[in-house]
Image 1 (cartoon, rainbow, N blue to C red):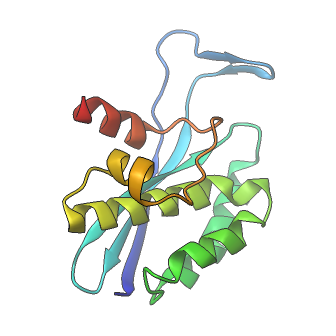
Image 2: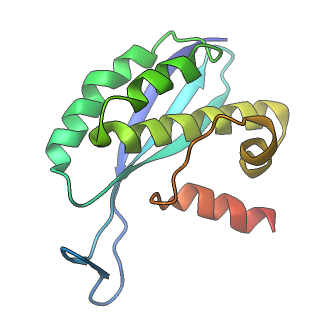
Image 3: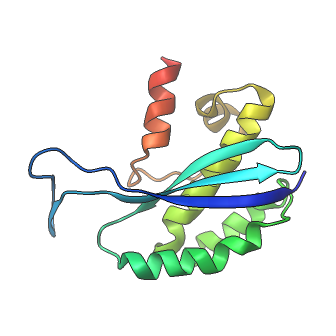
Length: 146
């Protein structure tokens, strides 16, 4: 099964109050993007790109926009290899890799009728979500599965 459509949109939730205290200052807003992958049979998966505040957002988005067209017409079976290649591309693309991988798992999970948390923990053993990523999508999924 091949991917036929890739869509992204900005997602910028704000913290209440004075923000989230970090070593470089208070972060008052998160800069994320959502991605929706659509397969040729119409199945979809949604993921989230996490953008750390320490990077130039315009540079990160430009890099993502240059890489994302490579997803069009990729088969789901070839997608993990492409993600592994991108994973070696430096810190600026790691949020995108996380989001695409999450969307892939969401798509597969929806097709199998299996929650992404089950898929992540038991079926797809190569998933590498580091502890430094916060995901609204994963958090929401974990809440709904309890």
